[in-house]
Length: 273
Picture 1: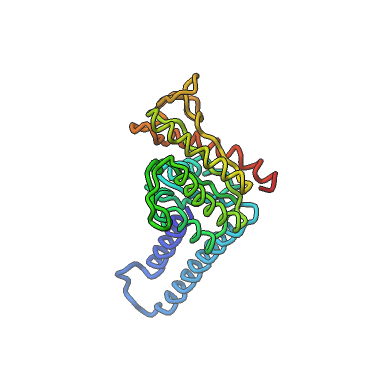
Picture 2 (picture 1 turned 90 degrees about the horizontal axis):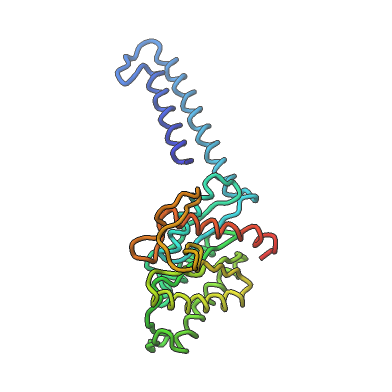
């Protein structure tokens, strides 16, 4: 919004300059000194306005009353980040920063899952981190010594938990409070069972670091707690909430998840976590 407003200010200033100088085809005459003076005054106005805008932007970034919420994770997390940005658009208490990477998985190289976290804490600040992984993690992986680890094996679980801990350590070390989102039920029973298994690891590890594990299993489900693609949105209007893949959500669905995340933020701050 600030960039758009600054663009309008520049446009206004340049139009004013052209008007004061009689347009591009102005004929220079004995009054050229007066016109130069007027143009200089308009240039000063433009610079002053832009300076104020820049200062306002800096003040907004440094405002201690604004809680910066950074989101890390995969394509599901990207959807949650978008939902948070839309739901909190008119709420001056929060600023949402999206640092997600679609396709990211803890079973892949650490540049995908740990890299963005380390880069952020080294250069930026936030009070709260929302983390969501798992959608791409139902796979075998290799450990640091290139040993092949089979999904659901004990050594796989142990290694996966260690990777979760590295994210948690980096965030906690930076003084950032953590909300780790669990994965929701999916259309496929097999996929859902795997997400439940992974969710249990998240819940166990997050608790060790004093973070908040946020279950989303039935955030969008039918009356029996089973998968459904349709339901009431934030306005109470029934519509499609899940995408065709039976895993991801529509924009309306992610906004419902965002509301669930937002609901824990005040208690997170009140508890000093």
